[in-house]
Figure 1 (cartoon, rainbow, N blue to C red):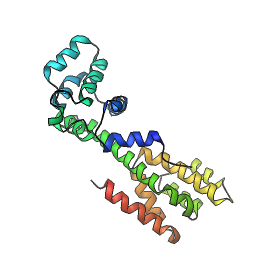
Figure 2: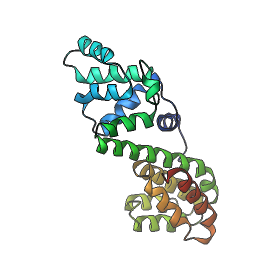
Figure 3: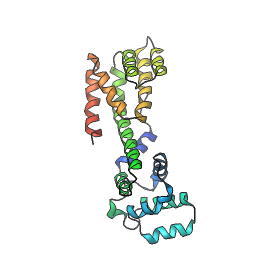
Figure 4: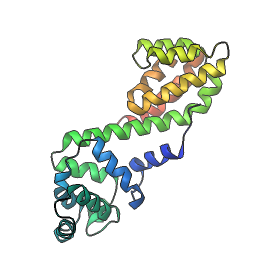
Length: 218
């Protein structure tokens, strides 16, 4: 059944908490997925609050290795070297603002998409227990989500294969939903809307919709 894992929790902390050196690999991976050009590592370091002398030392120690230079730059940032605290500290928001100030808007937008996906996944996980206990007519819900292009046909077939056991149908539906919500946070809102089309599922849909509005309307 879909449930929160330590990996999910660690990922969500990347967006909601002050960052530490433990997040180095996560930040590097996040920038890679978002298409950040490693060659601009010096500009990023300056805007994050690192001194030019610090960046010059990194370049001297790793000449021509922009990937290693970016890693060392981010490591200094996460350890709050130089004037990092005056730039907002080592947080997702300060990283996003630095990218925007560099006109790396597309990268910043992709970072924001990842944050929203992580938050939507956390909301889904919060409601997962109630959904696994109370969601009614999972097959019909799955077909409606297929019509909304949230689920693929294979996922609907998986839900149907749990018949006549409702708990198995719910489990298949929730597993499929978690996968698509992790890829696009808007799928959580569509799921809430679909739930509200079934009278016995309205309380579940309204609860998810409320949290979606509270945490993702920014």
